[in-house]
Length: 493
Image (cartoon, rainbow, N blue to C red; front, side):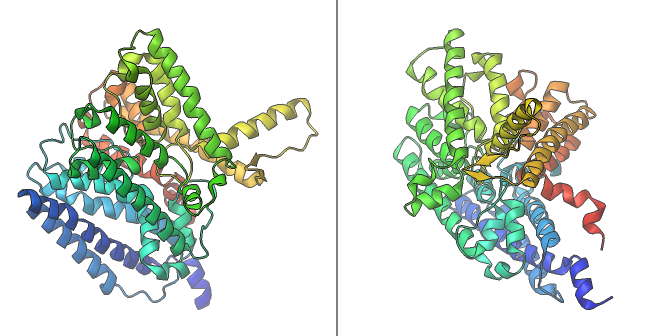
């Protein structure tokens, strides 16, 4: 067998692990930020973060300089494997502060919390966040901010050599959506442009929240978790702790932006504002929010839940945008709006926002594909000889892309069902099991208490938390990247 043939048929494990090492050094640098927060507030968790940062960075150094790959090329398989491995490694080292802090968590709880953070699911195994140090609170929100735009996308921005070595494969494996367009000629330029936009939005949101009733620390943490559509908070009552319409309005606006395709916002930032109104997905995003807002208001008025102006204006809009963007924040009294509203929330959780955003869910892009293709099939029942195609943004979509979208949606539903069935094996009530599975695959993170049958993810047994962690990762990497690793053909030479 020729050397060239071996190169094409074997996975380049040493190079994959070396890149993981580079990334762990970056994660070690990120861990310094909560360490500084602990130092500023004089908290004992400074030691936990120091140990975590050193252990993470040292492991990264050993992997980077201790592994000498015979070749540096990476193809599609390396791209998929690296993408999945990075999220697991980041969560494994990201859980260390939770296990070493002054209120240590069990292994399963710590990994669940870290995976929930990096995937921006926002589900939490903590019964109370206010007992934890400022460092832990900052790390929870910082994990969501890192995972929101994507760990791999950050890698492509800071490691230019990956432009020539599997960069596009990793970009496609991590970034949400059906097809991915490079905004700049080089993939690293695209990554840098998107991260710059993400950073600017975060900075603006931090300043706007700081102007209001929040202090700088709370403003920064909520900026991290809102623009990433993650939903972690520094308070047990979340943003309800401030009882401020201003805070709720500002966060609503930026959650909405977090659900928009960042590629569109990048183009708009460079003067192409018309791209929004020429985009079918963005227009559908607006229409869905408006239609559901009308339904919510009707339900609220019908159940006599109108108490003030905010109760039928800002509150339903906040809840709709929080759910469709998979942020998972809730207004204090939305359970009293009735089961009809709860059913609508399930639909919003499934839809998700625009592909290319920081949100979870199946994505509106795929729902549009499904609806248009279904309409074509119904029409063909009457006119079987008619040739019809799916059009999005005035472009004809190739049949193989449509088939892939339909397959994705079918597998998406099957994974939710399989996760729910598996959770019932751990004696989790039926409704809680399926809702938890749905919430984690869609990366929404709404607690099981939403259904009225359970309390929170703290009551899920350890084995159930490992299952949910896998579901969160599968949902964040949009199924195929993870499922491929479980197929024999992926590993076969």
